Length: 318
Image (tube, rainbow, N blue to C red; front, top):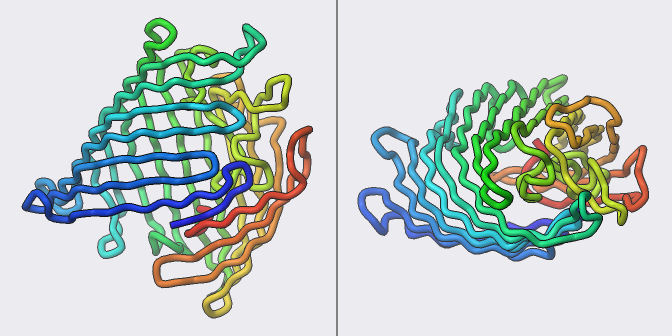
């Protein structure tokens, strides 16, 4: 797959899978990401249908380099995950995942206490748990129903002395067919990080807003507190809202949308000072999901924000 987003640049991803290297149903997967801002490689062992249909176990090892305005990071990650997943053949109302991950990351970011950028090494251990409830009619292009997803991750950071904290993110979306070819879609998201100060939190583990999967019209990670050079710092909470009107004619479609949101230094979102972006998009529908092109502009931009943002990817925005 390939795509482009303002603030993220170009991205291309590919993978190779041997689906039955370790019978029965034990797969080996190798994947790579090449992008303007990110480069990554990973290897994973998957055990499908572990004890019951669509319950999967995965052990993965990955390396990632990220170079954004907010931070630059070199990260290595080892993770083990067990999950009950949806598939296009059997879309489930209830899904879940649980796991453990250990990562080491060297990150360069702005520190308010020192008033300068500095590189620090963080070691993070996490126990992420996720539950989802899906009553939509389609995994890739829903036109009716709703989805709710909650992710909670207790974590320990050893980069600045032992710090124990928790990250939580609640995401919901709703789809209503006004007519056969007109759908209204809405999304809301709220997140919090409790138990640690922002400066002791690895920049890559903070919350940011802005971008193609967040508030369109603003560059990737551009929402929230900024440093003296107008680069994002990240925060401990976030809230977002999006509303789309989708009109489809044959294999093509047009979308109008309004996105709003903000990231905050506080651990609880304040639901104020929202940044709002509006735009229009085009869709080309295929048998594996829509290809989208969105053009957005911020209504209340700050210094450093672009007048227009462009996003190209596979799948609806939500």
